[in-house]
Image (cartoon, rainbow, N blue to C red):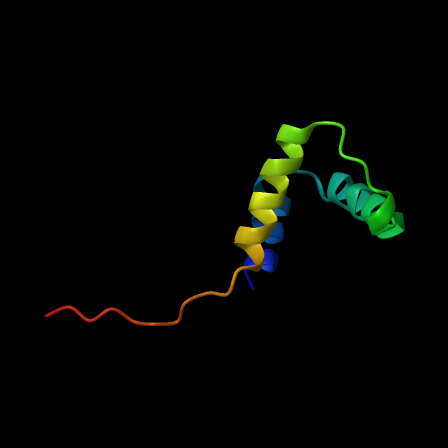
Length: 65
């Protein structure tokens, strides 16, 4: 759900749908073993964001007394 929410907000508020679709098409043709990230700082940030988006969410509720 986090990924869908992220993409929704990105499409709604930040980037034209055509730009996002172009990126999706590039990703879909990439082979994971052939991806080379030319900027290690951007790659590290992208990894962190991906981990945050795919991390399990806690469904515990806090009780206030």
